[in-house]
Image (cartoon, rainbow, N blue to C red):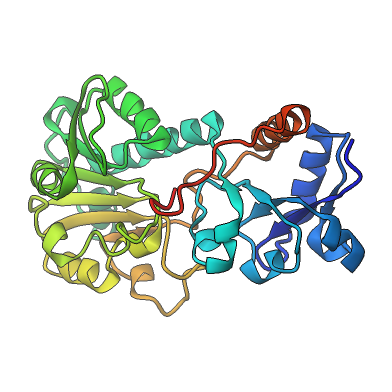
Length: 315
């Protein structure tokens, strides 16, 4: 057991911090896991490793000997946004349970759009009894932006449900049963054939604003969109314009540039928008804590650090 404590840092001292600390302590009883606010200055000066959940970068600067951080989030854009963190070895969470949970959400909300639930809700409001024509899954093409762990798991679920699936990634990927695209030309080609677009990309310099007016216009008229990635990947006002024009049928948004979504934002009231409270794939504390514990145990035993985030790529 190391004498140095391992601080746990969360965004704005999240009320869930105590629950995380409890789960982490249960997964690694030989370590001292302590919330950042409960560490005195001497203990902060000893910490070489920290476990984090989207922390305030300023708090990390108060750990002068910190060498590496293990995130319990898959996204680490807030960490990478602070140049001071370039000296750190940053490890993001890679949890099969998270991928399975996301794939479940992708299938559920794709079916919501495929079976035209928003249209039936509008008909109910009008007291309109009118069955809509049935479209088989094999007649729908679903496009995945991002073919990493989350995209690969989602593709499997969608294929099993009978949908045609295509996908796009920065570098060329090959997935069984999936028509894969890469690069700018590939993105344009994929969008043009996509009936339901599902965004699962990390937020990086390259993906910020990726879905702007010109790319949204490449989707077929009547297409729908799901964003389970990060809010700033979509240009909000461009999305609003294409929805107002009627070219997009419906969008499901689980992520936003500001969260919680302020009550005065247009998305709450738009008839073609479903707002979700960033709930599509919440981290499972138990499975995540076991993964973090295994990585730290391996580091203690061998000195081997887990694979780190590529600061240039952003993931």
